[in-house]
Length: 115
Image 1 (cartoon, one colour):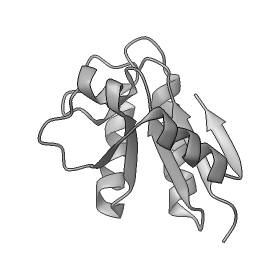
Image 2 (cartoon, helix red, strand yellow):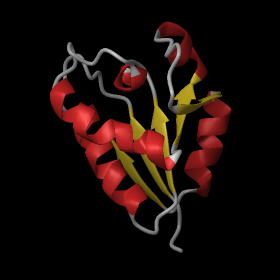
Image 3 (cartoon, one colour):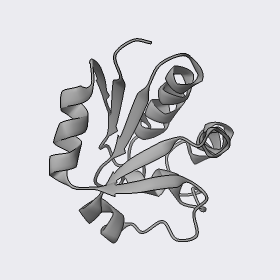
């Protein structure tokens, strides 16, 4: 197995297509033999909400995001972002993390994708 890959999503999915594109790319990476850590900052936890109608490319997101549930992929969500955008009743595997824990994830990763 290769070095872990960190996918950090910090763009606002209400205003930008990049978060959904990041999810599509992360899905491709997770489907292979890569260890992938997906970190959500700022408004990015909205990607895990039940209602994605207001998100840019929210319709495309619905093609990709359910597969993460099936795979049991963990989403690391910065604690402040999770408080601002709570994901209640979600079937996604979510782990709240501090900035120090995100720093450690970055330190452990061999490659990075930042959106």
